Length: 381
Ligand code: ATP
Ligand code: MG
Image 1 (cartoon, rainbow, N blue to C red):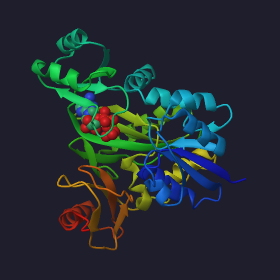
Image 2: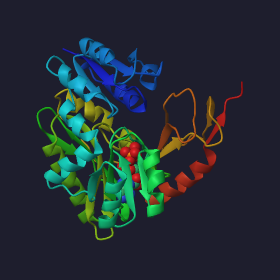
Image 3: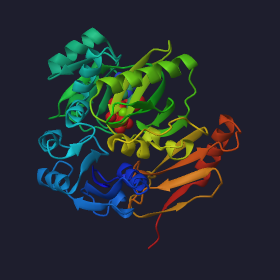
Image 4: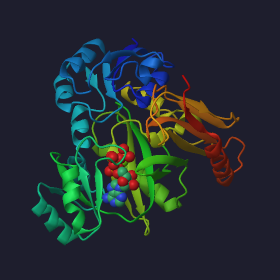
């Protein structure tokens, strides 16, 4: 029997999960819970409950209407989900969500399972922070433990004179400190585990951030064979220790001596996996559905190297917008249907696919050309 799928969050990730679900006969209907009326997932055909992600009544209602619940954001209410787990299937499991959504618990969990992470410490006040800096040295990153995205919960402390500013910025939040890693590269692995315990990983990709926001993903990543194998091994080990099914995005640092540390895990499909829409037979969105619906996992190998480039709202305006873009055969534009552009907001992405085997350098040349041709401009009214 086809199932009703409930998704907490109906932004671009929920939208692309919805589109993948529409192609699977195992799913009869999709309902998303999202506070923004007519959210991206609703625009492509999901039903929507308009409410806050943490609204207990709304989550209960979603669970009553759904056979299976999943999420596109990690800030869902894991306590409420835990209570509902007995009568509605929820994947990844609320216990896993609870660990992952708190960066401190997540790092402790990884460390306990012998998975390498940067040195970290929980801190509760200024004195503790000063003590940690004396022991660890500078720079360090002060991080909020919960609800961070696009680096907004991070403050890099380069000198002791910045301590007060850093603590003021995050007043009232639970915090931790992490040693600053001088990484050579940031990479990630999208990994899936289905309800039967089968694991599949996509090849490691390379991620380039600008102003703390992911801008470009290069798939596959330009890393040594050793790093590639090691990163995929770490991802598999992580999937073995985490409970529940679904796709996870595992972000990692690669140091100059090819050491790999996990930066963080997202218990959901991930921006660095958007290339799979064109580069692989099975996109990360379909893979996630296969994983939680108890289906066989699909092929996750990369058929054509691809560069994914995020389209961010320009810094110059906020409001309705038009996209000017020159079509090309190997370039796939995906806009998320967001009504308004805001500075640095993710409003779409492009995948540049090497369908003719011209090599990565050519893809980069094409990307540079596209960057100058792609314009987001205010809509004239
Ligand atoms: P996102 O939404 O991008 O996943 P986030 O807000 O959860 O991000 P993190 O992933 O912790 O934040 O950090 C954002 C970026 O800051 C990382 O991708 C990395 O570039 C940098 N960063 C985070 N932790 C460290 C560290 N310990 N050392 C050096 N750089 C770091
Ligand atoms: Mg991150």
